[in-house]
Image (tube, rainbow, N blue to C red; front, side, top):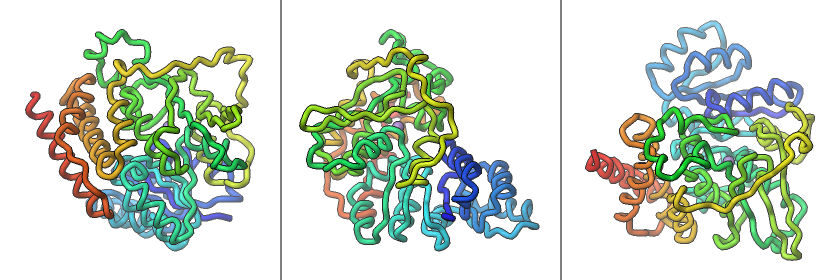
Length: 385
Ligand code: MN3
C-alpha cells in the first residue's frame, strides 16, 4: 500500500488522480489533500477518502471547513504553508503535484526535498525552477515522474534507451480550439470559445494556454529539464487527434512514439504505479476507428507566442521565469474579461521587451523576477485600456 498526497485535489488532475486511487484501492490510499477554494468538493473528498490532513487556500475557509467536518478526525490547515506541509507530509510515499502556476512551486519543492516520488503535473514549477528541482532531487533521492501526457510519452519511450542515442524529441499539440479559425477572426474569439478545448478536459489556465500554444512552449522548457535535453533537440508538431503524445527520434533513424486514448487517467495512473503497470480504466485505443492521424508544422502567425517560448528555452536563467509570469498575468486578465484573446500575446511581448536577462541563483531570485514581471504585465495591460 502506498500513501498518496495530492496538491490540487479539487482541480482536474487531482480529481482524476482520486479516481485512479478509488479504482486501485488495494494499492493506494489518499492521506493528504491540498485544495484551493472549492471547500464543497474537498468536503466530499474528505468523507470519501478519510485523509489525515487537508489544506485550503484561505484561513476563513479552513475555519468554516473544520466546523463542517468536526465529526471526522482530520487536521485542517491553510495558506501557502498549508500546501507546503501537504507537499512534505511525513506519512506520504507519493506526491501528485497538480497546483496550477508558480503557486505550485514551494509545495512541489517540499515534496522533492522530502525525497518523495513526485508525480509532476505542475509544469510551471519545472519551467521556472528546473535547475533547483533537479539539484534538490539529486540530493534527496526524490524521483520525478511526469504526469503531463506528452512528457509521460517521452518518459515511456525512453524507459529502456540510452539517453545519448536521442536525436530529437517532439511534443505534439492539439492546436487548441482555434487551429482552423481564419487568422483575422482570432481577435473576436471569446472566453467561452477559448475554454472549449476540442480534445482535453482541463483547468481554465491550461486550456487558454493550449489555445495560444503557450502550453506547448512551457512544455518544451519542462522537457528540457525532465530529460536533460539541449534546446536544439526539442520540436513541436500540431496533431489535432491528440493520440500520439510524443515522438523520440533515435540517432539510428528509428522514431519511437507513445500513443494512447486522450484521457489524463492514463498518464496519472502510470506515474502512480511506475515502474509497474496496471489495468486501464479507459476503453482501448481503436485506430481502425480513428482512421487517420494528422501532423502539421506550427504556424507562428497563428501562435506568435511560440517564438518567445523558444527564446526562453534557449536563453534560460531569468527568461523562462519572466515569460511564465507575464503569461500567468495576461491569462488571468483574459479570464477576468479585461483583455481580448488576441491581446494576450501582445501584452506578453510588450512586457518581455522590457525584461533584461539575469542570473537565477535560487528561489529568492525566481520569486523576485516573478513579482516584477507580473507587475510589469499588469501595467502594460492597464496602459492598453
Ligand atoms: Mn500536456
